[in-house]
Image (cartoon, rainbow, N blue to C red; front, side, top):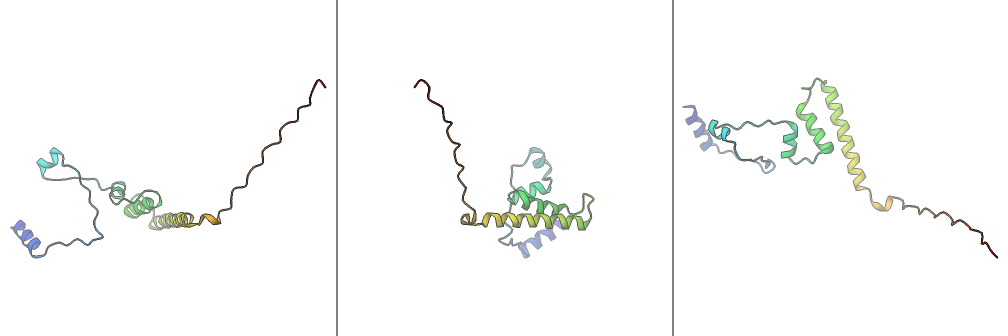
Length: 123
């Protein structure tokens, strides 16, 4: 009965996926998963960041902190402050990457040391 209700709801109200939710993780099913009809994946922040192609660095740190929140014993304030610090660093990195090369002073050439003067002998 419940399966019939679920099937009716699916048919009556098809699920539409917005375009911005287009992240998928696919892999072949293991024999045990095929036999049980279940797929069991650990959705830790690192797997999720990999699937979402966050690119590591500050972006992954921000995401990881937001997903774990205070489950590791930190207060909510500490987590928010750490996320803000990571956001600030990411903004600094973006600013560094946007700095035009013309602003960077040219390298100053280092003069060569003078050649030693060797006195002539036998004159």
